[in-house]
Figure 1: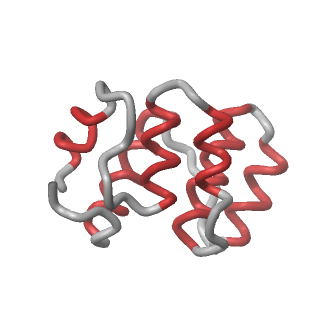
Figure 2 (figure 1 turned 60 degrees about the vertical axis):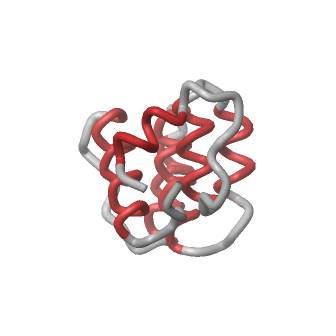
Figure 3 (figure 1 turned 90 degrees about the vertical axis):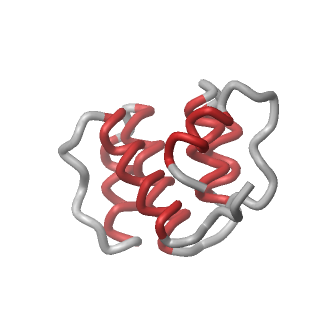
Length: 102
């Protein structure tokens, strides 16, 4: 799946089958459902989930919590806009093969 296909799927009521929990979190975030996104980000204590978790707390405005999650995934806190960070995360996860092809 490429980034455009992922973006296009946001118009649908449910995320595409085969997305990792981290990509599902970004999908729900793009739908404006922070709580569902946060739940998905917490499903797996892996680097991808922790990085999306950091982004979500940054978006929420909880910078200290975001910094905790950035440290846990060994990533520098983002200085990008929230939209740019979302895109960077989605692109990286898609390139890592965290989604099956539709």
